[in-house]
Structures are given as C-alpha cells and as structure tokens.
Image 1 (cartoon, chains in turn yellow, green):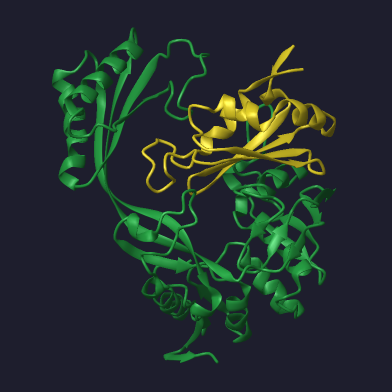
Image 2: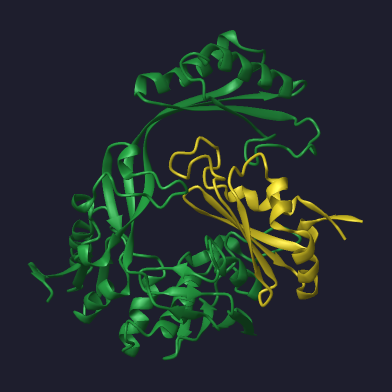
Length: 103
Length: 365
C-alpha cells in the first residue's frame, strides 16, 4: 500500500545560502525504521529532482526518530538572489510530506 | 539586533531609558565589521568556492562573533548589551558561560549550551510557532503565542519552558523540529564557540509545556570566524497578474508566454510561476485539478534598473493587450544585495566593547 509521508511524519524546512534542510520527524517512534528504509537520500533527490541541482545527504537520528536531509544547490543560487516566490524554500517541507512510500 | 549600526542602537536604547526614567548602562559590542580586511581573492565557502571578487562589488562583511566576544560585554555589568553580528546560539551560550564561570574551552558544556541556544534562538518557533496544521498538529491560541525560556544548570543541561497563560505549545515534537532547523550536519554544528554534536540529544516532556534537553556534546572550535559578505547583485524586476473562473489556467499560461516572447532578447532567464499551481514547489506533482484562480508571477535578474523595469512594463501591457479577464496587476523593481560567506582567521578580528552611561562613552578593557 502506498502512503504519503504526511500520514507518518512532520517536517520543517530550513535554509543556509543555496542549501535546503528538511527535518523529517516520525509521529510515532515505531515508524522510524520504515522511514529510514524507504526515505533514502536517492528517493528524496528523485522526488525533488526539478529543484535540487546538487547532492542530497541524509543524516539518521534514531534517538529523535528523525531523518535530516541536506539538499545542495536547491534554492536558485540562494535566499538573497533567488527569483522564486519563496526564496527560502520554506514551503518545501510539504513537498517532502507529499512524497509517497510503499508501506 | 543593531547589526548595521550597533553603537547608534546603543545610544537609542540609552535615550529610551531616559524617557522612561531609567538610568541604564548599555554595553555595545562591535568589531564584527571586517570589510577592510577582505581580499577579493579570498575563497567563498559556497559550493564551488569561487573567490569573493567574482561576485561583484563588496559592500559589507560581518564576522559572526561568539561568546568570547560577548562575555566581556556582560562583565561590564551593563543592563543591556547590544551586539553587531553574532551567531544566534551565542546569545544564550555567553550568558550561561558568564553566569557559571565556564572556561571557553570547556567544549562539552559549550556544546550542551549551544543546543539550548539553538532551540531558543527563533523564539516562537520552539513553542508552537511555524508548527500548526489544523486537525493533525493543532496548536492552541496562536494569536497569543508565548515565547520560550530555559532553566539551565551549571553542567549545561536545561529544562525549556513557555510563559504561563500564553498560547502555543512546547512539546517534544515542536522541540525536535527546532533542534534540526537549518542544521546542515547534526554531528558538527559549527559556531564561533564550539563544534556541537546534536546526534545524542534527548528531549523529554517533564510536565505540560516543559521539555528537558540533555545529551548534546562539543569539541574544539574552528580557528576561523565565518564572515557574511554582501555584494551588489544587480536588480530584480517582478510582476504579477491574476486570472479567475473558466479557463483561468489557460489564460494565465497564455499571458506568461506573451511576456516571455516579448522579453526573450533582453531577459532570456525569465522565471515564470503560476501561483496556485507550481510557484512554491516548482511543480504540482501531477495532482492538482484545474484551479479556480491562478496568479501569474514573472521575475528576472538584470544588470540595470532600466532593464529590470521591462518586466513590470510587460505585466502592465497585459492589462490592455493580453488575454481576457486579467486583473490585479502589480510590478516592482528592486536592487539586490547578495550574500556569500568566507572564513577569516580569529586573530584578524578584534572585538571591542563600548560602555554607554549617562553622557559618557568609554571603551571597556
């Protein structure tokens, strides 16, 4: 069965220059293993391929039930020079939560 | 606060104090402005490491100072401390280090205090701000969001809290989102004070709206300060127009294609967005049904103000020459200051504290 990450986790986006961070936090600790297995750096890179021009790194934080994604070259050159309506990429937390995984 | 002109901010605080009948002592920390020490050949720390000079005319450079620079300001006994550019967590690390008499190479304590500082630095973002989603992540009374504080002990462990009687919520979930906010490596969060490691952080709700934080670690700080450098990045022209009702999407797309064709020679890197469809995420991921209304947004970078203004001119032309039923036309042209970062040896930065009192201004030793 396919499920949206939105059902399993919450997310906050952050920015550093042209780098986007996405903190994906499981609502329930027992769902962390499933997220860690399915929401790989490659899967996130594929989901956001039209935005992220650089690499996606993933940091695992099992103690927090969280995965941290760090997406390079994702903000159209950076917050101060981006042409986007949302130059910080702050709305992109919900782009990740719209991603579907097999459960 | 006061990053552009901290001394003027300090004098203003002193004057405000006088108006309120308070004889304040204000300490102002400067020395973050290092524009005169930059060399255009210095490499930036951005992805491809191009030298500063390639970006354009440099107009500002501010080093992120830390606890080492702030503690002497606190030691003057000032009622208010105003700083130039400092790292956000240092605003909390410095008072803890000063109050408990920590050495500034006590990396483990500085690491723990940095976790507390990072959690507090965005205020309401810890206490339910930027968290709510109706039905799934409800937060009570956001219109009166309470800001957080932390009771910290001499080891650097703390219990976070929220002002009683205010709105918002402080929970393990709100704290987890904030702990990872803007962190590009949870095992190596670099500040001027320490390289902090958040991977072992534990968060525990000890009572409603009270969350205990422990388990952060620290190791030796880096030999450099990060410097935020502003440069002239040209101009941006921007314009918007709305379409609503039957075939709104098709009319907005037609308007975009007209503007693109008319500006193709002068501004080939035009950005077109359809607000309500793909503006925020760059796509609708194939899920959207036709929207009832759409707002076209057009933006372009330009070397001159005159060229940037061409975007607005074309948006206004849509009012009479574009598709049917357009409205709500707006256009704006702005100069842009871009920001890049470089690193500067600590020895090349000299923080200074000025104490403002009554009508006296003195340099602290």
